[in-house]
Image (tube, rainbow, N blue to C red; front, top):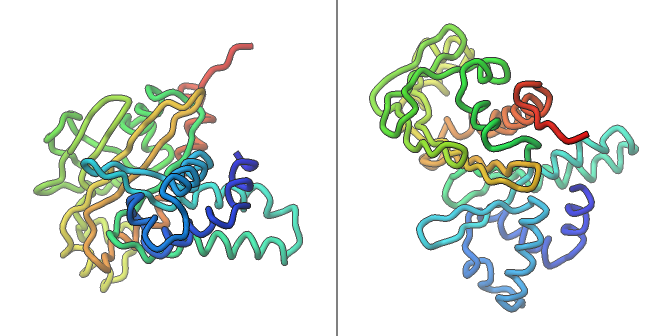
Length: 266
Protein backbone atom coordinates (compact mmCIF):
# COMPACT_ATOMS: atom_id res chain seq x y z
CA UNK A 1 0.00 0.00 0.00
CA UNK A 2 2.93 2.37 0.68
CA UNK A 3 3.96 2.20 -2.98
CA UNK A 4 0.45 3.10 -4.10
CA UNK A 5 0.38 6.10 -1.75
CA UNK A 6 3.76 7.38 -2.95
CA UNK A 7 2.75 6.94 -6.59
CA UNK A 8 -0.52 8.78 -5.97
CA UNK A 9 1.24 11.67 -4.23
CA UNK A 10 3.90 11.94 -6.95
CA UNK A 11 1.48 13.56 -9.41
CA UNK A 12 1.00 17.34 -8.95
CA UNK A 13 -2.57 17.21 -10.23
CA UNK A 14 -3.50 14.66 -7.59
CA UNK A 15 -1.80 16.75 -4.90
CA UNK A 16 -3.86 19.69 -6.12
CA UNK A 17 -7.06 17.68 -5.67
CA UNK A 18 -5.99 16.76 -2.13
CA UNK A 19 -5.32 20.44 -1.45
CA UNK A 20 -8.84 21.30 -2.61
CA UNK A 21 -10.33 18.64 -0.34
CA UNK A 22 -8.17 19.85 2.50
CA UNK A 23 -9.62 23.34 2.02
CA UNK A 24 -13.20 22.10 1.62
CA UNK A 25 -13.96 18.46 2.35
CA UNK A 26 -16.94 16.47 1.13
CA UNK A 27 -17.02 17.74 -2.48
CA UNK A 28 -18.72 16.22 -5.50
CA UNK A 29 -16.87 15.60 -8.77
CA UNK A 30 -18.58 18.67 -10.24
CA UNK A 31 -17.42 20.86 -7.37
CA UNK A 32 -13.86 19.56 -7.61
CA UNK A 33 -13.75 20.27 -11.35
CA UNK A 34 -14.84 23.89 -10.91
CA UNK A 35 -11.94 26.26 -11.58
CA UNK A 36 -9.48 23.52 -12.50
CA UNK A 37 -7.65 23.43 -15.82
CA UNK A 38 -8.41 19.73 -16.10
CA UNK A 39 -11.07 17.86 -18.02
CA UNK A 40 -13.76 16.18 -15.95
CA UNK A 41 -12.57 12.77 -17.17
CA UNK A 42 -9.02 13.52 -16.01
CA UNK A 43 -10.23 14.62 -12.58
CA UNK A 44 -12.30 11.44 -12.33
CA UNK A 45 -9.24 9.28 -13.20
CA UNK A 46 -7.06 11.08 -10.66
CA UNK A 47 -9.70 10.63 -7.98
CA UNK A 48 -9.86 6.91 -8.77
CA UNK A 49 -6.09 6.66 -8.19
CA UNK A 50 -6.38 8.59 -4.91
CA UNK A 51 -9.26 6.40 -3.80
CA UNK A 52 -7.29 3.29 -4.75
CA UNK A 53 -4.45 4.50 -2.53
CA UNK A 54 -6.98 5.19 0.25
CA UNK A 55 -6.08 8.89 0.27
CA UNK A 56 -9.66 9.76 -0.66
CA UNK A 57 -12.77 8.24 0.89
CA UNK A 58 -16.17 8.49 -0.77
CA UNK A 59 -19.66 8.57 0.69
CA UNK A 60 -22.94 8.51 -1.22
CA UNK A 61 -25.59 11.03 -0.16
CA UNK A 62 -28.62 10.32 -2.27
CA UNK A 63 -27.42 10.55 -5.87
CA UNK A 64 -24.32 12.56 -4.98
CA UNK A 65 -20.90 11.01 -4.40
CA UNK A 66 -18.95 13.07 -1.90
CA UNK A 67 -15.16 12.92 -1.70
CA UNK A 68 -13.28 13.24 1.58
CA UNK A 69 -9.56 13.48 2.23
CA UNK A 70 -8.43 10.46 4.27
CA UNK A 71 -5.26 10.83 6.37
CA UNK A 72 -4.97 7.16 7.41
CA UNK A 73 -2.33 6.19 4.81
CA UNK A 74 -0.23 9.20 5.80
CA UNK A 75 -0.40 8.10 9.42
CA UNK A 76 0.65 4.59 8.38
CA UNK A 77 3.60 5.86 6.33
CA UNK A 78 4.75 8.08 9.18
CA UNK A 79 4.54 5.19 11.63
CA UNK A 80 6.27 2.81 9.22
CA UNK A 81 9.24 5.04 8.37
CA UNK A 82 9.54 7.49 11.24
CA UNK A 83 12.44 5.70 12.96
CA UNK A 84 14.41 5.11 9.77
CA UNK A 85 15.10 8.67 8.66
CA UNK A 86 16.83 11.68 10.16
CA UNK A 87 14.83 14.44 11.86
CA UNK A 88 14.65 16.65 8.78
CA UNK A 89 13.10 13.92 6.62
CA UNK A 90 10.77 12.88 9.42
CA UNK A 91 9.60 16.50 9.61
CA UNK A 92 8.61 16.34 5.95
CA UNK A 93 6.28 13.44 6.76
CA UNK A 94 4.99 15.28 9.82
CA UNK A 95 4.25 18.42 7.78
CA UNK A 96 2.37 16.40 5.17
CA UNK A 97 0.46 14.50 7.88
CA UNK A 98 -0.50 17.80 9.54
CA UNK A 99 -1.61 19.34 6.27
CA UNK A 100 -3.81 16.39 5.41
CA UNK A 101 -5.42 16.43 8.85
CA UNK A 102 -6.18 20.18 8.87
CA UNK A 103 -9.81 20.78 9.74
CA UNK A 104 -11.51 23.30 7.47
CA UNK A 105 -14.38 21.04 6.48
CA UNK A 106 -17.50 22.45 4.90
CA UNK A 107 -20.09 20.12 6.43
CA UNK A 108 -18.42 19.02 9.68
CA UNK A 109 -18.68 15.30 8.91
CA UNK A 110 -15.73 13.21 10.08
CA UNK A 111 -14.82 10.53 7.52
CA UNK A 112 -12.05 7.95 7.96
CA UNK A 113 -11.26 4.85 5.90
CA UNK A 114 -8.93 1.96 6.60
CA UNK A 115 -8.38 -1.63 5.44
CA UNK A 116 -8.39 -4.51 7.94
CA UNK A 117 -7.21 -8.04 7.14
CA UNK A 118 -10.27 -9.98 8.25
CA UNK A 119 -13.75 -10.85 7.03
CA UNK A 120 -16.92 -8.72 7.28
CA UNK A 121 -18.38 -11.26 9.71
CA UNK A 122 -15.40 -11.06 12.08
CA UNK A 123 -15.18 -7.28 11.88
CA UNK A 124 -18.91 -6.99 12.53
CA UNK A 125 -18.49 -9.08 15.65
CA UNK A 126 -15.65 -6.84 16.82
CA UNK A 127 -17.90 -3.79 16.38
CA UNK A 128 -20.93 -5.18 18.21
CA UNK A 129 -19.96 -7.97 20.62
CA UNK A 130 -19.31 -6.63 24.14
CA UNK A 131 -16.78 -9.42 24.69
CA UNK A 132 -14.56 -7.66 22.14
CA UNK A 133 -15.53 -3.96 22.33
CA UNK A 134 -14.50 -3.94 25.99
CA UNK A 135 -11.02 -5.15 25.09
CA UNK A 136 -9.96 -2.52 22.54
CA UNK A 137 -12.36 0.31 23.45
CA UNK A 138 -13.30 -0.05 27.10
CA UNK A 139 -16.91 0.43 25.97
CA UNK A 140 -19.79 -1.96 25.46
CA UNK A 141 -23.42 -1.67 24.42
CA UNK A 142 -26.68 -3.04 25.74
CA UNK A 143 -29.26 -3.22 22.96
CA UNK A 144 -31.39 -5.56 20.84
CA UNK A 145 -29.39 -4.51 17.76
CA UNK A 146 -32.38 -3.67 15.60
CA UNK A 147 -33.09 -0.34 13.91
CA UNK A 148 -34.82 1.96 16.38
CA UNK A 149 -33.84 -0.06 19.45
CA UNK A 150 -32.64 1.74 22.55
CA UNK A 151 -28.85 1.74 22.90
CA UNK A 152 -27.33 1.91 26.37
CA UNK A 153 -23.62 2.74 26.55
CA UNK A 154 -21.25 1.53 29.25
CA UNK A 155 -18.01 3.46 29.54
CA UNK A 156 -16.28 1.28 32.09
CA UNK A 157 -18.65 1.38 35.07
CA UNK A 158 -20.56 4.42 33.79
CA UNK A 159 -24.01 3.73 32.33
CA UNK A 160 -25.19 6.23 29.70
CA UNK A 161 -28.74 6.33 28.34
CA UNK A 162 -31.34 8.85 27.30
CA UNK A 163 -33.91 9.94 24.70
CA UNK A 164 -32.85 9.40 21.09
CA UNK A 165 -29.88 7.20 21.95
CA UNK A 166 -30.72 4.40 19.54
CA UNK A 167 -29.56 2.01 16.84
CA UNK A 168 -30.13 3.86 13.55
CA UNK A 169 -29.23 1.13 11.02
CA UNK A 170 -28.41 -2.53 11.43
CA UNK A 171 -27.53 -4.33 8.19
CA UNK A 172 -25.28 -7.22 9.30
CA UNK A 173 -21.79 -7.35 7.79
CA UNK A 174 -22.47 -4.26 5.66
CA UNK A 175 -23.65 -1.18 7.55
CA UNK A 176 -24.06 -0.23 11.21
CA UNK A 177 -25.15 3.15 12.56
CA UNK A 178 -26.06 4.44 15.98
CA UNK A 179 -26.44 7.77 17.70
CA UNK A 180 -23.58 8.97 19.83
CA UNK A 181 -24.21 8.98 23.55
CA UNK A 182 -25.50 11.80 25.72
CA UNK A 183 -22.92 13.83 27.62
CA UNK A 184 -23.79 13.04 31.22
CA UNK A 185 -22.11 14.37 34.40
CA UNK A 186 -20.96 10.84 35.21
CA UNK A 187 -19.29 10.46 31.81
CA UNK A 188 -17.64 13.88 32.07
CA UNK A 189 -16.23 12.95 35.47
CA UNK A 190 -15.04 9.53 34.26
CA UNK A 191 -13.05 11.00 31.34
CA UNK A 192 -12.03 14.16 33.23
CA UNK A 193 -13.72 16.64 30.86
CA UNK A 194 -13.15 20.33 31.53
CA UNK A 195 -16.27 22.04 32.86
CA UNK A 196 -16.53 24.47 29.94
CA UNK A 197 -16.15 21.69 27.35
CA UNK A 198 -18.76 19.60 29.14
CA UNK A 199 -21.24 22.50 29.27
CA UNK A 200 -20.88 23.06 25.52
CA UNK A 201 -21.03 19.37 24.66
CA UNK A 202 -24.10 18.53 26.73
CA UNK A 203 -26.17 21.14 24.86
CA UNK A 204 -25.42 19.73 21.41
CA UNK A 205 -27.87 17.49 19.53
CA UNK A 206 -26.99 13.81 19.22
CA UNK A 207 -24.70 12.95 16.32
CA UNK A 208 -24.52 9.65 14.42
CA UNK A 209 -21.63 7.23 13.87
CA UNK A 210 -21.91 5.00 10.79
CA UNK A 211 -19.66 2.06 9.89
CA UNK A 212 -19.65 0.81 6.30
CA UNK A 213 -18.00 -2.56 5.58
CA UNK A 214 -16.97 -3.59 2.07
CA UNK A 215 -15.02 -6.77 1.16
CA UNK A 216 -11.71 -6.05 -0.57
CA UNK A 217 -9.90 -9.31 -1.34
CA UNK A 218 -8.63 -10.75 1.93
CA UNK A 219 -9.36 -7.45 3.66
CA UNK A 220 -12.38 -5.36 4.60
CA UNK A 221 -12.60 -1.72 3.67
CA UNK A 222 -14.01 0.03 6.74
CA UNK A 223 -15.35 3.56 6.36
CA UNK A 224 -16.39 5.50 9.43
CA UNK A 225 -18.68 8.50 8.97
CA UNK A 226 -19.48 10.53 12.08
CA UNK A 227 -22.06 13.14 11.13
CA UNK A 228 -24.64 15.54 12.52
CA UNK A 229 -22.31 18.01 14.21
CA UNK A 230 -23.11 21.67 14.62
CA UNK A 231 -20.52 24.22 13.43
CA UNK A 232 -17.84 24.56 16.07
CA UNK A 233 -19.00 21.36 17.78
CA UNK A 234 -17.21 20.53 21.03
CA UNK A 235 -18.08 16.85 20.61
CA UNK A 236 -16.54 16.71 17.14
CA UNK A 237 -13.32 18.10 18.53
CA UNK A 238 -13.38 15.49 21.30
CA UNK A 239 -13.90 12.53 18.97
CA UNK A 240 -11.76 13.66 16.03
CA UNK A 241 -8.41 12.36 17.29
CA UNK A 242 -10.09 9.71 19.41
CA UNK A 243 -11.50 8.01 16.32
CA UNK A 244 -8.08 7.85 14.64
CA UNK A 245 -6.62 6.11 17.70
CA UNK A 246 -9.65 3.87 18.16
CA UNK A 247 -9.77 2.64 14.56
CA UNK A 248 -6.05 1.92 14.78
CA UNK A 249 -6.66 -0.07 17.98
CA UNK A 250 -9.58 -1.88 16.32
CA UNK A 251 -7.42 -2.83 13.33
CA UNK A 252 -4.62 -4.15 15.55
CA UNK A 253 -7.06 -6.01 17.77
CA UNK A 254 -8.94 -7.71 14.92
CA UNK A 255 -5.77 -8.74 13.10
CA UNK A 256 -4.10 -10.15 16.22
CA UNK A 257 -6.98 -11.78 18.12
CA UNK A 258 -7.22 -15.52 17.31
CA UNK A 259 -11.02 -15.57 17.42
CA UNK A 260 -11.16 -12.76 14.85
CA UNK A 261 -7.97 -13.19 12.83
CA UNK A 262 -8.33 -14.15 9.19
CA UNK A 263 -6.91 -17.64 8.75
CA UNK A 264 -4.88 -18.14 5.58
CA UNK A 265 -4.21 -21.40 3.81
CA UNK A 266 -0.82 -22.92 4.58
